[in-house]
Image (cartoon, rainbow, N blue to C red; front, side):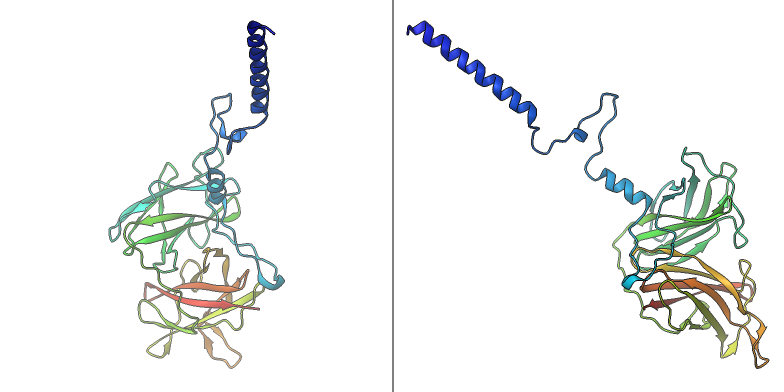
Length: 313
């Protein structure tokens, strides 16, 4: 074979080898690349790693299931968006120890501000703020502006991550939407206090809790007896009842629906004595510990007291 013929055959072999490599390269994608990693032809862009997880977390946090087969009871306050509504805070960064104007809106699926709310417990919206370790509890009643936004003055004195709950009813459906607030500084989280039947309010009222043995998935009656200097106290109406109770689950801070009962609050006991206790009915969805924040009114001042409630089978 002549030199020219050998060179031509070698070139043909190289061309064939290159063509085969090109076909193989089209069948195998580069390591780590997927179709979702490319911009689409309409000018959109793919989600960055973790975007889908972040979007999912905007809607709900994973709630613990009831242990040992206990049926879970619906809770609220795990989602920033639910049933087509979303809570949007203008600025979630707060400065420690300073009064700030907290402004937020409830918006629908189109991003339009919701303006119409039902009256529940004498208010159209209740705002609850608590630190993630269930300290720093505040119950506020913001004002609604003509544009539908809500605002209130808020001061927090300790750093950390706080949970904001917007509790309201819209078109006859009670809802609680929640999001996080961040307060600058080094946080010092505290452990949840152990369950105790007695506690003292911020105004030095003695409060006794009778909850019996609370079980998951079953309605429990919570009865609070209030005294001052050993004398029973008859509370004044507050938000349409003898008191107001917020229950939050340790860990995910699920917001429980609690409603007042007719038990006590000036009614006569079988012995003929007056029962000035304040009662509520609550269904704890799972085993675990819950923080109960009772508020009651006496002599024109609202008192707040907190209890830890253990729930077990």
